[in-house]
Each structure stands twice: as structure tokens, then as C-alpha cells.
Length: 233
Image 1 (cartoon, rainbow, N blue to C red):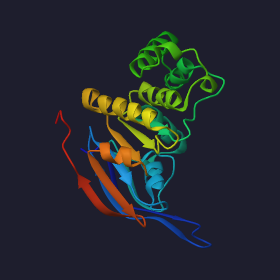
Image 2 (cartoon, rainbow, N blue to C red):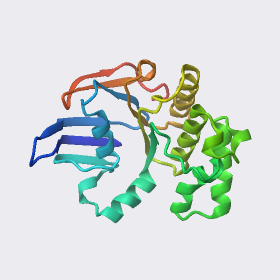
Image 3 (tube, rainbow, N blue to C red):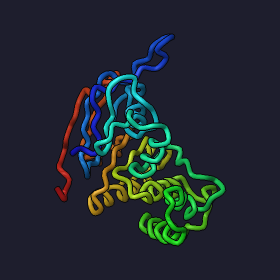
């Protein structure tokens, strides 16, 4: 069973005024352990697609099925809980909580899941060590570089033991060194931990590392290029 499947996914904004067709019947399957980039020009529907399969937006028509669950069948509260339990998010703007330290930011999602504080602290520390921030756990976002903040964001995304991670332009604000380090870390998690990653990106550096590249043009899949199978497949 696919981790993610969309069927006839359509999204129209401003339906009653000047309609904007962001997605036009997208059929897509993402299997476990994929390292996939969704690419295309600005306005092609990349972020809209990620938002819908992440349960952050709803389609005008069609379905988004995640781990066998049609997201349209969930109430608002059920959808919030589903995202919390199944999906990790990494955003372009990091979206860290400014008043919390790195370890507190990572622990926050687990606390929302109702896990014991001791477990939250232990796992947060372990994740930050794994992303190379063992010496920054008590630093707030303002004291971290962009690359370090994005690493915290990745650790936070992984803290909930998600079925997959959605990364929307995760390298857009990073320099070349930070981008390479971040992609190395994500590729390592994909290969060794079998973590599924789906990127929305313009960044050629991300595209070059992806094992599958899905190209959107005018809200439709124009090309689906599978470059190589997962090394552990």
C-alpha cells in the first residue's frame, strides 16, 4: 500500500471570482522509503499539493489518501490529530517557536502527543545529537544560524515518529554548505532509517539528490522520472 496516494486531485482558488486552477487532476502514488522531489515553475501547484497531502488544505475535487485514510473523511479535530501522529513537516521559514530552546522546540510535538516529559527530553536530546547540534540544545532560534535552525526543524519533524516527512522548500534560505549538510543528513535518514521524504523545491541541489522527480506544469504532472530504487529496497 502506498504511503500517499492522490486521485484526480484538483484545487481551484477564487472559484466565485477569477478562478485560479492550482491543481488539475493529479494522480500520484508515493511509496515508503522514497526520496522524492516535486518540482516545477512558480505557480505550478507544488506547495498546494504538499499542503493537501499534509492535511493543511483541502481539495476542490478528488481525494488524498494517506496511510489508507481518505483525509476528506476526517473532522477538523481528527485531522489535527492525524497530522500529529503521522506526518512530519519541514518548512522554508523553519517555524520554530522563538521563546523555546532547541530541545524545547523538538520536544513540543511529543508533548502534544501526550508523551511523558522524561521521554520527550531524552528523545529530543538524541535527535539533536543525530543532526549535529549536541552543543546547541539550550540555544534559542535567534542564537542559531539558518542551517542550524533547519536542523532543529528536521529533528522536530522526526520526533513524532511520522510515516513520512513533507519538506516545502527546505533549502531556500540556506547557503551551499548548509544545504549540502542538510541534504546529507536527510539522505542518511532515508537510507539508514527508511524515512520517506517528499520535497517541494526549486533548488537544483535538492533535485540532483532526489531518487524520483515529479514535475508539475499548470497543476498537472508533466513528467515522473524515477532515477533509482532505494538502496535498501
